[in-house]
Image (cartoon, rainbow, N blue to C red; front, top):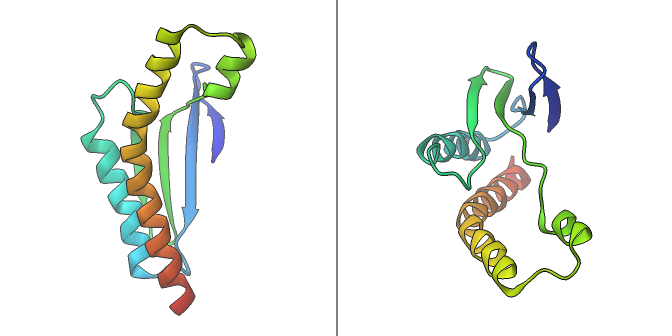
Length: 116
């Protein structure tokens, strides 16, 4: 994952993975991730994917950069109120669905890589 700067000084995240030695299941996992990000594009709690490119040797995804996490929030405000904690917990639970899908893909890809 890289931070990139556009000509108009906007910072984006650029994910580039090599697929030269990847098995079919691993490549399909990355394609599934792209499809999932495309389907969830309108949801405000999911990082927005702007573009992607698939070549014979790599997959590149340009997306919104996500810089805020709970650790950073708690460093700024070590004693948040109950409503604030509830809001973050709801967001974590929502994101867990997306994370579980990605984790499943990674586990599947790792097992395939061991046999390749």
